[in-house]
Image (cartoon, rainbow, N blue to C red; front, top):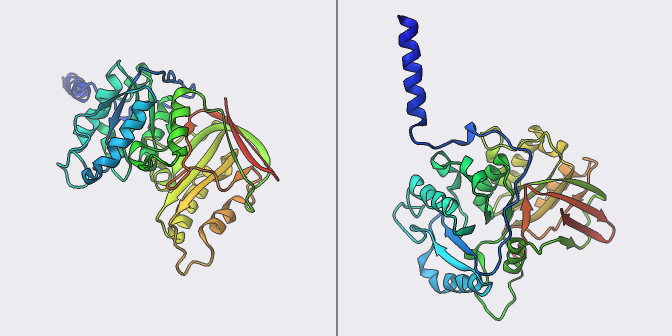
Length: 337
């Protein structure tokens, strides 16, 4: 009788855990075969979603120009229901509501890409309310940087390519200036992005390597270590890192974490983007010297000065896609398969 009662209890608990129909990240296996969403074409619809910090509505003139830019690409723009809400302090809305906005955009067959409007903090708080398995059933481009790195990590886990690149909230408002970051996002979304070249840097390490692109914002990379969205390091990868407004000692601490977690030693190549606003304080080396101390003896190609991160230019790259990097005395080039 006790066995029967126990079996019934287990069955009821199982049904209860499945009653929402949602799948948390730790129930989703790492998919090593990546799905590539269809590239955009004129006439497609993109959704704007605020998954992280709330949007400063006093800057609506700037944001309207960003939307005009998207429309100039021939795209229809759909606002998430709570895009400009101010109802939850730091956030535009509570975690489940923000997740619902993203889920609706993912499930909407008319939406071909989701552009996160800005970063900040809070994207990972929504993960328990999202059905991650549905992302593979309805693959579409998700694009952003900064705090959105957490979402791109989740996409890598479920095997869907995504875009690390600028967001509408970061578009340049001055229409007399060519926004090369926005142009790069356009090329990534429409499938015309083939390669990115950089000039020589004194900390570059020569060589050539191929691997799956992972990474993004350094804080978010280290925050994911040991969690249910942590990267699968068993397949060849190229690690991309950038950061903003961090002290050098905190950057050093985060690099220590990646060093001890095996992220650095297993990488086929390292790509260092902008480390904007880093302050040295009493630390003995500046931020790039500090990073160089971790990368110089890895025996793999290393690119410094790569145009990604929290300043211009912020070029787009395909996270989850296999890329090749070549570094020599003339600089570097990253090419996408």
